[in-house]
Image 1 (cartoon, rainbow, N blue to C red):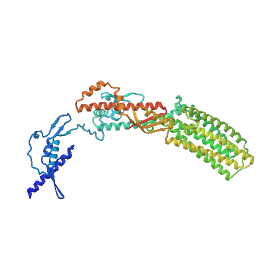
Image 2 (image 1 turned 30 degrees about the vertical axis):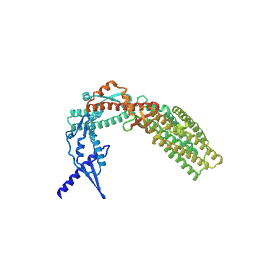
Image 3 (image 1 turned 180 degrees about the horizontal axis):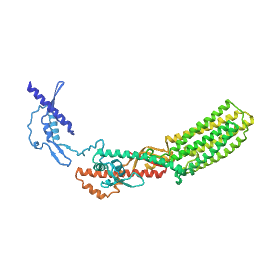
Image 4 (image 1 turned 90 degrees about the horizontal axis):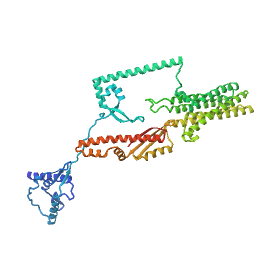
Length: 569
C-alpha cells in the first residue's frame, strides 16, 4: 500500500512540474506532456511522460543584455535517453506524437534579460539639487557676501523681464557653508532668532521716526516738490473728480441757504443731493490716491481695485444719504403739508446749480469719450463696463443732478402756480427715485468689476489664436482671462507643448557632430545616464525659454495683459 502511495505522489509532482513548464513557455504547438490517454467507460486515464522535463531544460537558452548566448543543460544534450515502453492505443496517434515531439525538440526556448536603470529613492524632502539666490542665502542662512564668493556660482535663466541671466547657488553648498561658519544648527538657529528680534526693533524704530518726521513737516512745513499722487489730480479722472468736488460743495452751500429761506422740500432734497455728491466724490479722490500705491508683499497685484471699492461705497452712500433722505422728506411733506414762502431765490439758485452741474457733466463726458476712443470702445460700452469707475460716478451723479434740478424746478413751479404743497413733496420723491436708480447702477457695475469679469470675447479669441498658431503649442485648455480693473488683465491657460518641437529647438542650437561623438562614446549604463541627464536638463530649460517667449508675445499682442500664467500639461 505504501509503495503505491509513494508512486502516486511522484506522478503528481511530475504532473505539476510539467504543467508549470508548459505555462511558462508558450509554443506554437500544443504541449506534449502526455504520451497517451485511455478511456474506460466514463473514466479517462492520462499517462504522464517523465522524459519531457529533461528535454525542456536541455533546450533553454538565456540571452543577456550584451547579446551573448548561454545553453543550460548543454552537457546533457548528447546523453542518450533509455526508451520506455508505452501502451499503444493506435499507430496513427503514436506517429503524430512522435512528429510533434521532434518538431518541439528543434525549437529552443529563448529568455532575454532586460537591463533596467535602478530607481533612485529621493525621500519626502529632497533639496540636493535646489538652487537659491544670494539674497536668500544671506537672509535665511545668516551669511555674508564674502562667504558666497567661495561657493560655486551657476548662471540660470532669469524669471524677470529686465535681466536675461542671474547667479544662483546650490542650496546644499549654502547649508554646508552656514554650518561651517556657525559651527552647529543650534548656533545658526540662535543667530536667526537674534536677527528676527533686531528686525522687529528696526521696524518699530522706523515707524516712530516716520511719525516724528510727519509731525516735523506739519510744524515747519513741507518743502518737497509735488508728488506723483498729487499730480494725478491735475489730469484724467483725478481732474474730473476735483472739479466735481469744488462745484458740488458750492452748490450744497447755496441750496442749503435757499432751503432755510423757503422751506421747500424739493430744495431740501437738492441740498442733500449736493452734499451726498460732495462726500462721494471726496471718497473717489481717496480711492484714486490709494490706487496709485506700489504693490507690496501683502498685495502683490497692487491696489488698483481701490477705485472700484470707493465707487461701490459711493453708490451705497448715494442710496442711503441722497435717496433715503429725499424719500423721507417727501413722505413727511405729504403727511404734514405746510405752505411755502417765496421761491424766487430758490429759482435763482437752481439756475446756477443747473449751469455748474452741466459744466461738470461736460467735463466728465469729454473725459469718457477720450478714454473710450483710446480703448476702441463706444461711449455706452465704456460706461456699462465701468472701465473708469471714478469718472463713471461723476458722470452719473452730474447727469442725475441736472435731471433732479429740472424735476425740482418743475414741481416748485406747479406749487407756486396752484398753491398746492403736494407737488413739491412729489418732486422730492422723484429726486429720491432718480438717485436710487443711479446708486443701484453703480453698485451693480462695481460689484461685477470686483468679482472679476472676463475680457471681451474678441480679445480672448485673439489671445487664444496667438497661442494655437505657435508651432511649439499642440493644444490649449481651460483658458481664462480676467479683467483686474483699470486696464489690467490676468491671462491663464493650460498648454500642451509639443515635445518634439521643443527638442528640435534645443538641437538647432547644438553642434550635431559633437553631439554624435558624445553618443558614440557612450558604452556603459552610467555614461548613458549622465548623457541623458545633461541634455534632459537643457531641454527643460529650453521649454522654460519657450514659455517666456509666449508670455512676451501675449503681452505685446494685448498691452492690457499684465500677468500671464501658462501651466504645462
